[in-house]
Image (cartoon, rainbow, N blue to C red; front, side):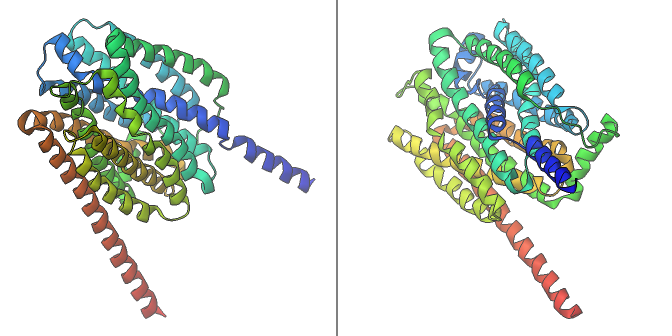
Length: 416
C-alpha cells in the first residue's frame, strides 16, 4: 500500500510538472502576446506620415504602450497568485484581440493611442505565462523552463518587427494589428484545450492586499531591487536601439524598405538561443558570472552598431551581440528572483517587469529625441552610456556581496 501511494504521488508529480510540449505552447503564445507592443517600432514613420506627426513626437506611440504595460504589470499580473491563471490568460487574450481590432480601425491619432494603450495593458499576459511556467516547473529545471518560454518571447519580439515591416510594405500598417488579432483568437482555442487547471496558493487575501504585498517585495528582497534596476538599464539600451534604428535605415542615403528593416529582427535571433542557455547556467549556480560577461558584451555591441553607415554588416553584428546580451541577463534575473519566493511568482514577475517597462518607455522616448538632436552617433553614445551604467551597478552589487560574505565569515570565526 505504501509503495502504491509512492507510485501515485510520483505519477501526480509527473503529471503536474511542466512538460516539454506545454512549455513550447506557452512559449509560442507568450511570443504572440509580447509582439503586440513591438509591432509599432518599424511602423513609426508610416504612422507619423499618415497622422502628420514629427520625428521627435512619434516615439510617444511606444512610450504610451510601455507605460500601460507597466500599469498592467502592477494591476493584472499579481492576480495570478490568487485566481485561476488559466481563466486569467484566456479572458485577457480575448480582450486583447478586441483592442487590436480597435487599433487597426482607428481613424485618428488619439484613437490609435487609446487602442495601443489597451493593447499594452493586456500584453502582460506574457508575464502571467512566465509565472505559470515557473509555477509548474520543478526547482531543478525552473531556470531552463523559464529560459525556454523567454526564448519564445524573444522570437516574438524579433519576428514582430520582421512581420510588421513586411506587411506594412504590402498591405499597410493596419493589417499588422488585424493579423495579430486573428492569431490571438486562434491561440485562445488552443489554450482552452491544453492549459491545465491548477489551484492557487494564496487565495485568501483581497485584491488590494495583493497589490500591497507586491509593492512590499521591493523592501524585503534586495535581489529584486538589484535585478530590477539591471532590467531597467538593459531594456533601456534595447529600446534605444530598436526604436531609433528605423529612422536612419528608412532615410536617405540608405532608404531601405520596411520589409528590409524588419528583417534585421532576424539578426537578433541569437538572443533567443542565449535565453535558454542562460537559464541553464543560472540553474547550475553561474548566474552572476553570466550576468557580468553579458553586460561586457552589451557595451561592446555599440561599437559595430555605431558603424551603421559604414556597412550594414556591422549593424547586423551589433544587433546579434546586443540581443544576446540583453536576453541572457534577463533570463538570469528571472531565474534568481524566482528562487527566493516560489509561492509569489506572479507578484515577483510583476515587481521585476515594472522596471523592464520603465526602461523600455524611457529608452523609446529619449532615443527619438536624441536622434532628432544629434543623429545616430548621439543614439549610440546614449546606448553605450546606459549599458556601462548597468555593468557598474553589477560590479557594485558584487562588491557588496563579497563584503557581506567576508563579515559573515569573520563573525563565524570569532564565534568559534
